[in-house]
Length: 349
Image (cartoon, rainbow, N blue to C red; front, top):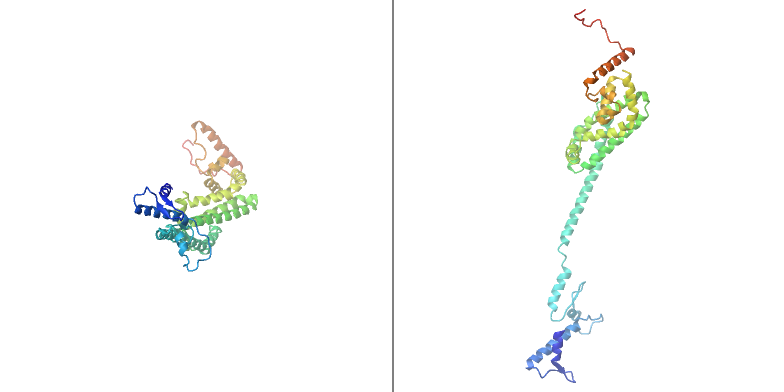
């Protein structure tokens, strides 16, 4: 603006609006240069005002006049003067037509994500339709078998299904389905025990525990890949321990308050329950939850060594008195000490 004001001070016009140089100018060439500069500045001011839309002027090419004022026809059009028209037109075309550098990369990334999502969805569908139904049938047959039964199960086929599931990154899905399947089975076992009479409860509990342990001896090996590459490496646990914990949570813990008094009573009355059954149940409970031994220390010490604290020399007379009392009770209940006639005679006799 200061340049424009300086130029206008050197320019004068007459009543016919003819511009002429002031008397202070040194030559006519410099005055013509200043007149040209002034006109160009005035033209740039006029061209910055957009022309209102209207019908084309007759004889004028469409867009000729508008092209001198605007650069580009899309969003972001820029005003320009006639002298810089070609240069501004190139810049505005590049700005309007060239895509951002990251667009192509974003499209490629989105396509890769979409294709990966579709592949994962297809793999999960294949797992649900083919792999897991076959595994579920095999697990059902292994869970309901008795220790003396011989069920025809293709362990190689089960092993193959588990291997494919682990390789296809379905380890977590397979582990959740396996534990849910066994949990539902154990809840049915618990309901079945509730319906049994108390006098047969110890025998029925032993059957359920023995059958479940026998099933795990078949289930755990065929799920070896799942145990090695997911449960041990990522969960830092063991498959057998997890499955035994399911039995403790859903069966043993629910019935331990009913089972313990029956075991104590049966232990006080020898041979009321088979010794092998008593030993199996007590050892089984201890393997599930060692702290259950504190509920009946005398009972568990009769089948599991080192349950009671170490013997103390000062309590030896008490230990002898306890043994004599136990022998007396056995004799009174009809258990003789045996034929004493075959006992080796001492040298004094």
